[in-house]
Length: 440
Image 1: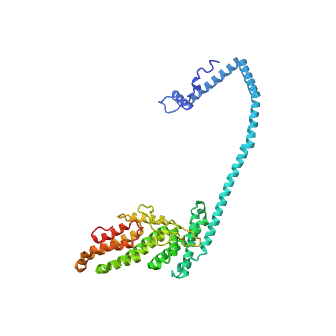
Image 2: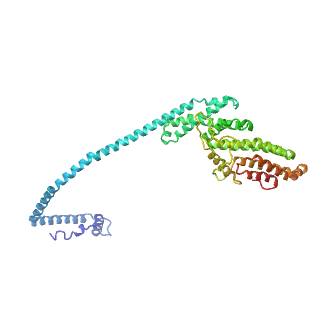
Image 3: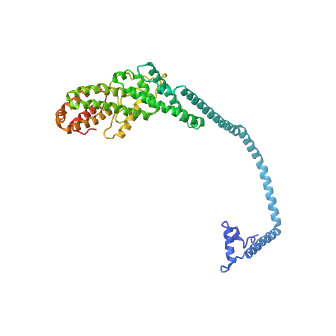
């Protein structure tokens, strides 16, 4: 049997590759100078090798049949012996596996499937409940006559306006809850929810924002005496506007400050041609428009229930006012439920952040500073124009610079509340408008 593989060792090597072998075989049996390939000769060679191998196998079997039969019998005996030895162990293993499958694996698989089904049922139930709540909120929002809210005549002295503000507060709460529902990815993907948001929720919200903004502006157009008696309504409207559209509240704050500072500048500018009236005009500004801005800023702070944080500091944190504001900070937002919508100190911080980002010359820390900053820019402009014109007015202004500067310091020291950490900055700012220093 030792010569059985002779001449065929190459076929038995582990690295044998029949494709490479066939390629080499074809090259060896064909001449490169010919345009045709001879396949017959290689096939004959391979056929001869196959016949030779079969012949050798037949000869080997005939010569060693007793040994082969003995080995086959021995193999069969070994197989039977192994089977007899392994059967009990295999039966025990099978029994153990069946017990494990019946008592552990099977129940676990069934429990897993039930858990998966339960989760899907729970998700479906949660989604249906969310949709039911959303539908209920839509129905609540539809009970408010938005057109009546839009056209109702405003007179803050009448109870009808008080009721209107209350309706706006309640409708704002509904829209907040709707917005919270729409923040859910699953609920917002429902087609009916998307359609309700497009056809009803968003249009009503836009109209409501417009109306609340109009009311805040109209209320802030009142004088200080009038507006100070409407604290609850202002608190409610500020809260509603911030809840519905923070960006619109920021625009409104900016517009109100610009309006009040412009009116104050007009009053002060009249004194340029009549310096003897400057002090009384300045006191008029601090007694009306400045107090209104302070009141407005305090109401934004108090719009958050129980807020006692103070005016936003220049670094965006909060500093203690150091003194109580003119009104209790424990006032609740004007709504039937007593709920609040906003962290007002955070609202002020955000507004100041955006304002300082757009006005990089000086960092404002309060609305009152912004109010005087805008007055300073406009008043200095008017003051310098009249000085450059010369004549009696210009001469009087040159002679009165010190008087005006001292008047600013005296009046503002008395009128600006001490709890404003930027009080000194405000005084220095206004004095610089007549001293030739660059106004911020």
